[in-house]
Image 1 (tube, rainbow, N blue to C red):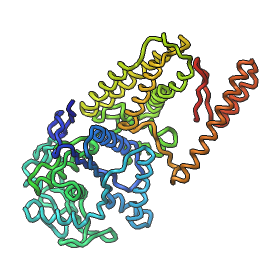
Image 2 (image 1 turned 180 degrees about the vertical axis):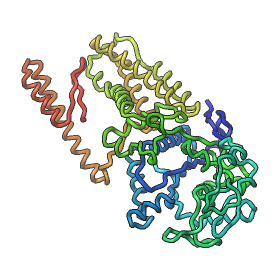
Image 3 (image 1 turned 60 degrees about the vertical axis):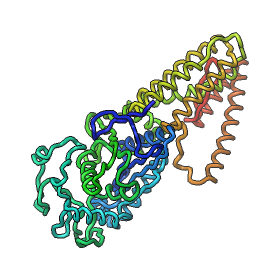
Image 4 (image 1 turned 90 degrees about the vertical axis):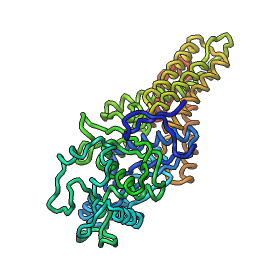
Length: 488
């Protein structure tokens, strides 16, 4: 089954054929580190983490690069407001980013370059564009001459005439054409600057990513990704510089995830309608946001609300419960006359899952396959409970179904193994595991006492144990096949 991707460049789904068989080179635009990350950032991180995981799962050798923009007007302004060096601001929010990435199980990129460590590469790229006649210098500023690149607009599907109608030159700008964009900005008093052939200054936003891609992945890459809002002008400008210089295709496939909205408006800091990833983590397991993001096709808009988080939490509990029910089914008596198993359902679910994921990473359909298997598991479980017994074959098939859900959810969707932010070292992890082990043994012992009290109709004692456990954050649920418990 071939993998199909929707390519923004061509506007259609295409068979994925990497440049080198078995290898995939991916670049996605990272965050500008001037503030904390919100759900919009989180969606892009989760989407491309999923894409990378699935490519890994298919057996590709993936090289994944995601950058940090660590010098920018917003960073500089924040540094001025806080009377701090811009590097302190950048370092602070890079640290915040890594904490969020750890919390939400975003796997680290293979290479995570910073703009400020690639200044020589950026200067070299700009000089080559000048030498080829695609860029020009005016009083320390360097601009890309858009009209000289004949294919400008091919990614965003915008014509030069459309762009001219909306373009204008600010009074402070020296460029020759309103469409031209800055590759290098002459320094201003009090701002960070680096030496260059055109005087002190700093790079423009669009040239940074092009230079870092050339440095780490080469002139042509397999996949370039990012949010839909980056298609124009950022990615269009990246492409123009790269192909003007190399005269080769810059990226074979362009993948853009849809925006996160709130009541139909784009979630953004400028509108003040954003929810930070920290706020999510304080209220929910990180897996809940991952599941919400993956329940919507990556190219579609995601309208965020706390109500949807609650709905997703319930769906997530259904997944976890289906996995956990195996331990309860094991307690049933063996009945080899029990008819039915899940092997056919497992095969069908896995087949549908891979078919959906191979069709432009259709995660909603892939999740539908998983929840379809959960439904079959619940039917078998209810039948076994009613029958008060289950065959070894049916029990083993339930175990395999639970393992299949856990494996697909963990390996490709990044679910079920959320990291705790308070865990800093292996030593702390060990101590916590021992502590949790003691807690679980104590809870199980108390539940055995409670069950005995209920059988002996000592309901006051049973209720007292339940209430005391609730005070400790332990919620219990009495089911036909035994008592379940979980920590809140």
